[in-house]
Image 1: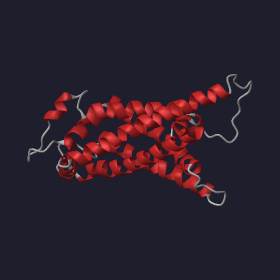
Image 2 (image 1 turned 90 degrees about the horizontal axis):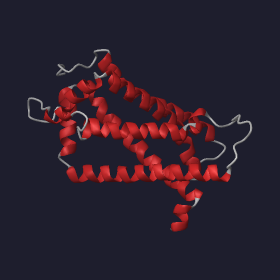
Image 3 (image 1 turned 180 degrees about the horizontal axis):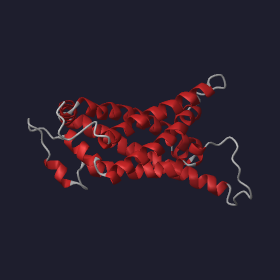
Image 4 (image 1 turned 60 degrees about the horizontal axis):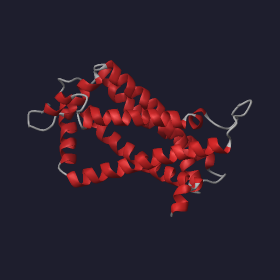
Length: 227
């Protein structure tokens, strides 16, 4: 077991599996967030439902935190291993097959990690905006809808959010094709199809997330709305 965690193959498998876990979470989280377009009632009811299941909620949170730690840890280990294997940089580095997404995985991953930590401090634990903890709707539920709208009215917050989603798109674009390959699920007959489908899904996920702050900027979703 220790050899598995210490090996490059083991690290790549862990990265692939934890990446798949995050993809599943991103899609589920997105479906919940998109309810903002249905109005305050839909968002707040969804948030109240999640809070009514604390054991499940915290099981998912702890699982995601462990997956995040493993994903970042194996990413750093693989990067250091690759550098140690080639301590002297090439005199001329002209990548041929490597995409921009694959060459910037570490950078995009670190920025997305910073965004996740800020996102948790902003909306989940209300550390950066403690006043959000006192937001309640007419039924006494936590007004997550109002918290999201007012939060995204900040240009800096929304700009960071959009930037993070663009980098997330790049990260996912490479991850969607590399994970199946690492797990031995890729073959020459449909590898190109998997890569194209992965890129399209990465763009779709990022665009859907970006549509939320963008709708606030454009006034499509407003704080006073009760639809």
